[in-house]
Amino acid sequence: MTLTAAILFAQAATALPAAAEAPMPTGEAMTSRIEANDARLFWGFFEGCDPDAVADLVHPDFRMVHDLVGLPLTSGQQMLDQSRERCAARAPGGENEGYRNRRLLVPGSRTIKPLGTWGALEEAHHTFSEWRGEELGWVQTGGGRYLHIWQWMPEEGRFQLLESLSLDHGPAPQYPPEGAG
Image (cartoon, rainbow, N blue to C red; front, side):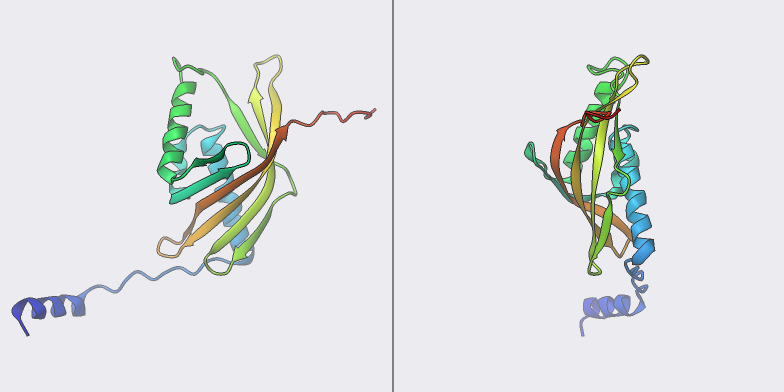
């Protein structure tokens, strides 16, 4: 055995054991983690306008498929960069200074299902609103449905958003509904 091989063998024999991989949570534990991630994610990219606060939720290989525009995002970095630009435009002196929008989950519309021990599928409906000033307040501008694929990262013990399918976008429904009395 050469000296180099002996040194490498000795280093391997004394190396610290690898960190234990965390098993993917199941049942209510999985559901509550995905729900918390969803709330943080949409706050960071919409109303809170702080993408850096939620960057840890976005997988580097993230991609988004959208029914109105096709494939608008092909990486987690692209998603973060575009959001930073939009948030900067809302800041004082920006071209959209003062713009505010909000995303709200439609209560009762969410389902979360495991994808083996690899990840989870989240599906729900949500609505979008824009702030129109003190006189009008928040005005619902539309809504849609989404499917998120959350990959379990066992080395880190957390889920990251790998893919988003954003579908069924449309105008805000009339409220109160026609004929309501």
